[in-house]
Amino acid sequence: MKHIFWLIVGVAIGFVVAHKVSQTDQGKAFLSDVDAKARDFKDAIVDGYRLREEELRSAPKGN
Image 1 (cartoon, rainbow, N blue to C red):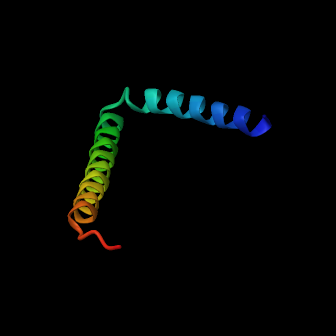
Image 2: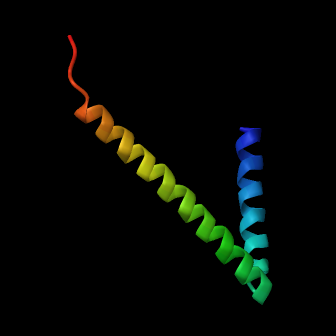
């Protein structure tokens, strides 16, 4: 239970800091860059998953 509390506190502090940083022009640029990189990473993961799924579906069924 103690760990969950600290996780929630950490997330809340992260949101507060991100909000404060986003109020500056440099902060907006930084967070925009982080967002773009996170989206690129997510897209790469999704593409890899779909490619592997297609490979597994098209593989011959062996008994």
